[in-house]
Length: 462
Ligand SMILES: *Cc1c(COP(=O)(O)O)cnc(C)c1O
Image (cartoon, rainbow, N blue to C red):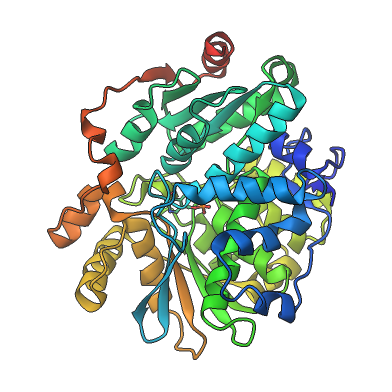
């Protein structure tokens, strides 16, 4: 399996090369050159398997000869051993035909762990083999950073620098990034919003001299290996509810379009998915894109679901590549317009293709709180505000016999203020991180300035 860039100007890479480099050198994102297929019998055979065994079968066709079968099984086993639930990503019933897919049983209580724990193990094995060392720089709206720091802390061949927007992450998120004592991990508070952090990260990758000097590697959701890890739970949850004999739909709380793109990949591989529903908070560029055909940035307004406070949804580029018939030049043009003019309009063909696969909705702040309250009252479940955006949007979809699975992307204790404000109940941290608020923090605050960030990274790595 080879990986090609969405902008068509970078060389095709193997899985391992695409994983280690993150962003392509032409500014594009790597995607597989074709979608591997799973037939109905292969999907049916996932029923009853462990999460790890299902993960092996779903991901195996994508990795080529990057790892031996035994090596890959070992990576998967290590990745999920630290999860606090035997099913890893369990499905829970909310209503007669509405289900939650719980993705928050990993070490930092958000779905980012599902992918990050896996790629931590992949990086370690791959770098050990080659004797190389890399510098990982990531931008986070909160959850990616904590998941990355947790997954890479203490590994030998990796330095990690995480840029997060100062004052715009929850205290639990910040502490999960600033309290790990290992010297190879660094959390940087940037004076800016998440889109600034992500833009500086892209600048670093596009500075080829710097990129080579520090052997830059990326673990943001632009990294293909992360999207791939997330494809697995679309299969396991659908099979738990009767796929491939029965179709399912998914509603996905969306920011960077990584998680829902993984659902699209599962569908392309043959999983019978009826609808993929994009749920945004008040930062609703993706919902507006579906509703109007125009993809246009507005300012980011901080919300109670901060991990979705995003206006530049990086992984949307991967979808554009498909709906523009995999024409790199067309994607390049759209992305240039997004950067220079703040947006672009989809042509009619692209708009039709988008509408065939996806629906969308948004949740205001009040609607998010109301969904947290309602879900507790109706189903005795305390949900996080991101999940609540999903639940609200799922509930407004037209009635259907097809089961709806809403992705529960974080544990409520990761966002205790919003949950308490909505319900009066303050969710407690699980036992294993009960002392989080007593651990000492290490914080580096830097301006939203490329030169300052580059020199910090260059000087602080081992
Ligand atoms: C990252 C995140 C999201 C958004 O996921 P994307 O892949 O960026 O669309 C939603 N909820 C939580 C809790 C997150 O951490």
